[in-house]
Amino acid sequence: MPDLHLRIIGSRLLDINHSPYFFQWKPGNNVRLFNPNSFLPNGLNGATATPVVLWLQLPLSRLGYCDIKFTWWMVQEMFLFGTLFFTCFIPSKFLKQVATIVIATVFFCNSRNWWLHVYNGQYYVLFGFLFSLTACLGIKKQHKHTALLLFPSAALLRPFFVLAMLPWLINSFKKKSTTLLIGGTICIGFLLVSGTFSLWSDYSKAMQIYSTDIVGGTGIKVGSDHRFDTVATEGCVYRTAIFTSPKIAGAGALFSLQHYLNLFGVKKSDPIFFTGLLCIGIIMLLILTKRKNIIADEGSMLLTAFMIYLFSELFTPAYRNPYNLIQYLGIVGVFVHKANWRTILLAVTGLALNHDFPFRFIYQREIGEALLLVAIYSSISINRLTETSTSAKQKTNI
Image 1 (tube, rainbow, N blue to C red):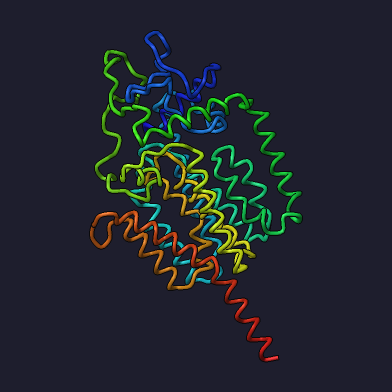
Image 2: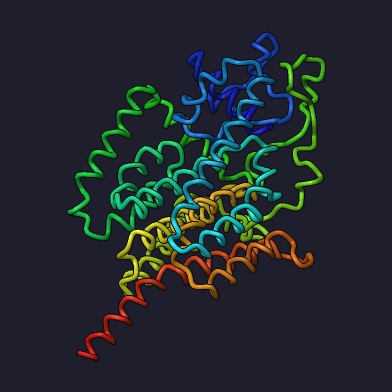
């Protein structure tokens, strides 16, 4: 769990009032702050999680790393089960409930993407859980403003949730302003309690440096740091140059736009450039949906929000990894609930391709996720258009 180890070191640095993002270990420092497996220039420490994530990890970081790894594995499994539990409640028809369970268990709960998530000690399953909880409360329990209540605080864990609120904000904002105000107040309360205001500046500076990693700007080298070969490590922290198990090395997904531009020799890392492209992409998506008046129901808004969230991932100048796909589990129930069987078949085809079925070919995994996105967009309008068609027929009959 190398990524978990980096976050734990960040939490431990936060605990002793050091910058979690800019700290270089030196002989004589506590070995619990030592990461033997990466060389990080520019004063970077390796932590890329937000200050609030590192603050929430503080109780865990005070344990020994052997206990931390096992505990975090259990936490991951707990959020996986919770996400599956909530998402399976959403479809109202029995066959669609069965389809949800089959898709979720086959393509997510036992996938190489999931095991890569576990192996690296990641926490993206938490974001899938938040989407599934929002869907269950918003669609099944008819609490229409859940997203505006949860997403402001979720943005402290993953800033992309700010943009994910857009479908609700542009759809009857005045009716939901009170809920947004409450959500924002809770968010500010988290910041005050955590005392992490001052760390967001360091976080922003670190992310700007990491944004140059793909184009070779950071000089980060993953592997054993031979400068400190003789330094003893904390228990259950191992020196290794291999960060991916052979059994899960075949996991794959769409990479960031920056990655593909770099393949064609376009070395861009300017956040303003990618922010501009992201804004264009989101505006186009919102125009396409708003023009057809298809984001009026809670399910459509949630799927639109999820696509905006994924656009943010794809346009951000940073690495995007296969374990990110676990987040789709959070909207499987909403998707199946709204989709027709042709759209479900398209999504299953995309997921099968992403898992190298029926055979492996170049860019197969990326094409698989792209088809999944097409299926999600196609399903956004299905129920709304059906309702419009039915209403038109009724008027004609009258």
